[in-house]
Image (cartoon, rainbow, N blue to C red; front, top):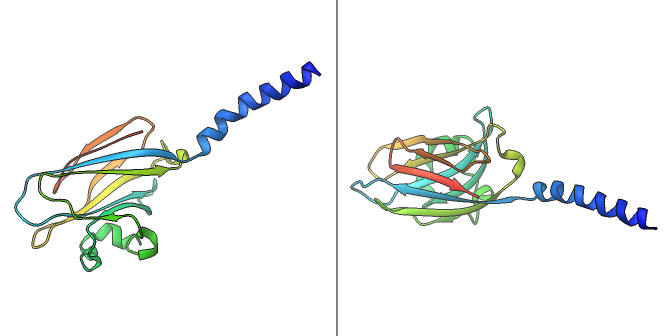
Length: 156
């Protein structure tokens, strides 16, 4: 009887960590915009796979869908389907402002070639396709943008 209980306890102890890794992992994404003149920026924050193909929308900053066409890599990849991002939207982000987004990601995406990408656009100004490309790894990451995004980082 004791051998059976010990065997069950050992089996449970070895499978529990595997089950924990299979559950979605919370990730906090912090985005800071540069100072610029103009209205609030629209941002599409999304995931691409190892081949650079769109996979999932994480967040859209800016609620007027008529402006989403300016977020070209995101819309071109299929991210502009309302069912895909419904509930993942907030206000546009102003000059010099910060945006913090919390999402849940599957642990299998980490260190598998996936990237967090950000497209940005400001009314009457330049659009920036995939201005941030940040590899998704188990270690916290950080990158700078080439347009309106000053820096972006994530942590678990």
